[in-house]
Length: 162
Ligand SMILES: [Zn+2]
Image 1 (cartoon, rainbow, N blue to C red):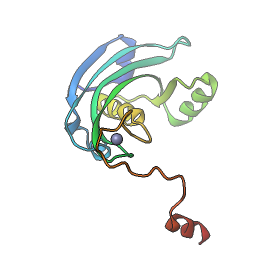
Image 2 (image 1 turned 60 degrees about the vertical axis):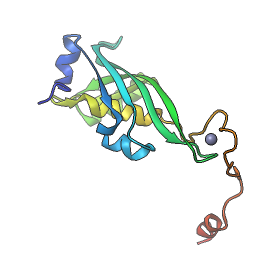
Image 3 (image 1 turned 180 degrees about the vertical axis):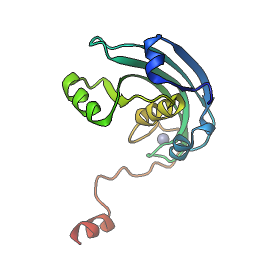
């Protein structure tokens, strides 16, 4: 078991902490969604309790990834600065019920595990924080700007007709 695999309930009960820095190249799913594997993510977990007494993991993820601008197709560096709170429950049924009861969009309810992979949670958080439509605030001068057309392509329209 690696140092980034923990017993999640114990981790919360003992208010443990874990942190590290991991290269983007080591996150297989994230790597598939970014332009290249440069950059790294710094992450930190704090075990604790939700105000209702449920075990809770607080997570922060910071770093940089390389994305491709959808306007000019030139890669750029995207900052990641994400925070989340994960409340732990013991099974899927409880997860749904708890999610409904807490009714708090800032909290995710997950099923606890005796071998929880912290890096998988870091990767989930990073993936969720990526912009849906990445682009420069201001595209570099001289770049060929792709027309940001709101019109659907003839192919997309054809597909709908089928
Ligand atoms: Zn651009």
